[in-house]
Image (cartoon, rainbow, N blue to C red; front, top):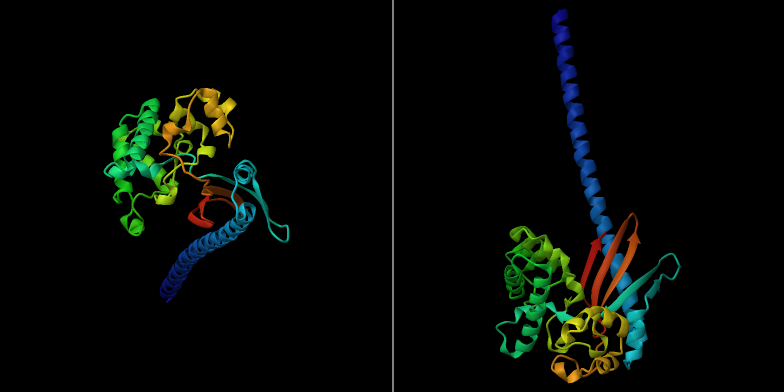
Amino acid sequence: MKSIAKLRKGISLLITLSVITAMLALMGVMFNYISIAQKKAESKSAVIQANLLMKDLKDILDKQLGKRVSKEKLKIIYSTPLIIQSKDGALSLAADCKPLLDRINIAWLGLEDKEKYANRFNLAKNLFDQLSDQAELRDGEMLFVMIKEYLNGYSGYFNISSYIKRKKFTISQSDFYKILNRYRFEADDKNVYKIKWDQYFTFAPLNKDLDGLDFDFLSKDLITFLFDVDQNYVNENYSLGSMNEFLEGIGEEKDRYKWLFNSKLSTAMECTITYGFRENNYVIKFNYIDKRISSFEIQNI
């Protein structure tokens, strides 16, 4: 009888331990689920906060630009951080905006078969080749083909379902860097990261209103490329809005690239906001075109 009692006690203990183990496992799953749910909720809250910040910045830009755009207004926006502050004063941060059309549009690399855009493609390809040679890429042509294929609608480098609705000849900065990462591993070429791509190329959508560049607000790196001028000389003698004076100083004329420049001032710009939300820091990047926000991206840093 004693042995039977001990056996029953042992079985009961085994069952109890099994139940406890199962409950602990279930609790672990529940805690993991709660943690994931909290992260998703925080991400959603961060996006909501980002939308509010972008709206605030858009209102500031709309007000500063007013109905009549001038070079002086744009110079102030491009050279001075814009301060955003909540009504209760609890949140205060700075946003930076710079011209969207001060560099070559990366989308022009996809226009090789478009005769109408031959000048733009050739200029973009010459810049791409020069940067590739300077960085000593192992296979610059492979990278060019990857970028060109993506711009023409090929999505094989990524999850196709994520890109079904994307437009041709449009690429975000984050997707461009995914292509660079893919090239780096396929070509085993770290040199691709030596190139400061965003100092020469912009990631603007391809449309007729954004075909040209802002003559008065070209980037210093692009000026060095276009007019074959020493970088140090450009850094010392060029400032935003002084392009005519700079060209006179080097004996050049605007007409050399007459087809490239817009005939009127453009308010197209790209803006960046860095802010803290709860325990994380985020960066918002977006384009401001015709008083509208587009190409919105948010990253956790």
